[in-house]
Length: 325
Image 1 (tube, rainbow, N blue to C red):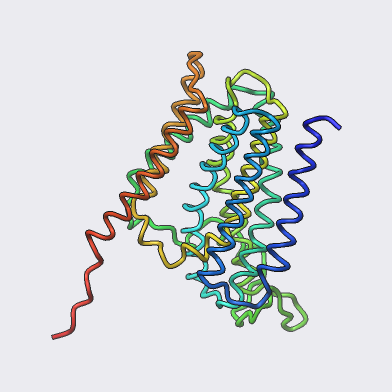
Image 2: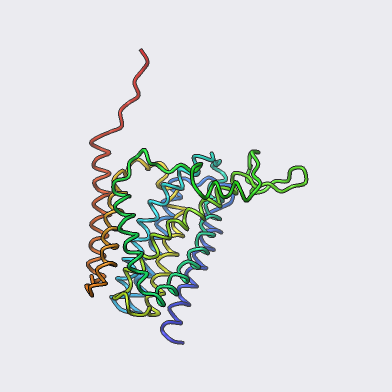
């Protein structure tokens, strides 16, 4: 077997065993996922991702290992921003605690399937039309600037989203309590419950986020816009995406009670998106930023924004509600 075949085999085995372990042992249907359990699951996924990084480093060399950890950190940070939207969706549809884990799991598995398809399509398009990276660069630059100045009043509202409106037009929806069901039969017709709508919205929302994350990771792992993708590049793009998305469920339950603790994470992510957008655009002038500089910028921006968010929340506690006079 070649080195590439061994790498893909190890990745596949690790993925299957991790899913079996997570679904069969660490998670049970119709059970509440506590913060303690979510913490252990998050540690499990992070350690597994780091172990795969160490394997790549040993098997492929330091540069490939650095590309992987850089892409994984970028995907992980974007996933945290994604989770805050997930929390709003679950709150809006009032998902029962016993149904939350199952709905989130199915939504994430669907998101992985769509991610694989989008990555394949993105690689094919960029390989044939490398100038698309400049379009993506301009898009990331705009997205980053818009995200940096976005106000709290512009908070995502599931009812106003295009995904929700499209679901309402395509499917028959019932107002009955789901009670763990995704579909119910009424008057001889099949209706989707709010739990099914949540699953569709989770997968659809992740597709929207993929429009940012996939070109971002592609830019990080490729040395030059005009050079073709190597097998190492493709492995890093797929593995970093899948490992980051698989950890979304445990992160959701871990961060659900700490949404207000990361007020400035949005600005940190925005700066990184602007940086990567600029990185993609200056490729036109044959200016290349190394993966090591990219890794340093990501760690500095994300770590700094999280640290400042915690500092600000401790020094500016939320005001207590005033009693009526």
